[in-house]
Structure formats: C-alpha cells, structure tokens
Image (tube, rainbow, N blue to C red; front, side, top):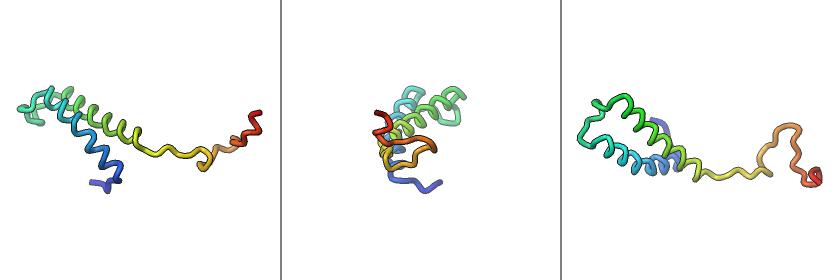
Length: 81
C-alpha cells in the first residue's frame, strides 16, 4: 500500500457507499471470485469514479496569480484593455 494523504483517505471513505450499492446490485451473497468480468469492471469503475469525483470536488483550486504561467502569457490586466 501507499502512504495516503488525508484527502485520499477521505476519498476512499466516500467511495464506500457506492461500493456497497454496486455490490448489492450484483448480489451480496455472490463471492468476488465469482463475479463476471463485466461485474468486476463495473465495480472498479464505480469505485474509481467516486474516488476521483470526491478528490476533484474537494481539492483546493490553485490561485492563478501565484501559479507559474506558461511562457508568453501575461496576467497583467492592463494588457487586456
């Protein structure tokens, strides 16, 4: 396992309800080893999507003023007048 950031730990926890939902849909009594390929891929897609969505929605938005700008791009307001 990797060392998770606090945000990653929260994102993993946020994915749990979605994992439970898809597992219930597939059948809680069905062992993971008996999932079809399609069921396993759906499970992975649901969990990864929930994880990524949480991280995206909860990551701080970088300030464009303090972030390095691509070469040749000016953030001087007077250059847009």
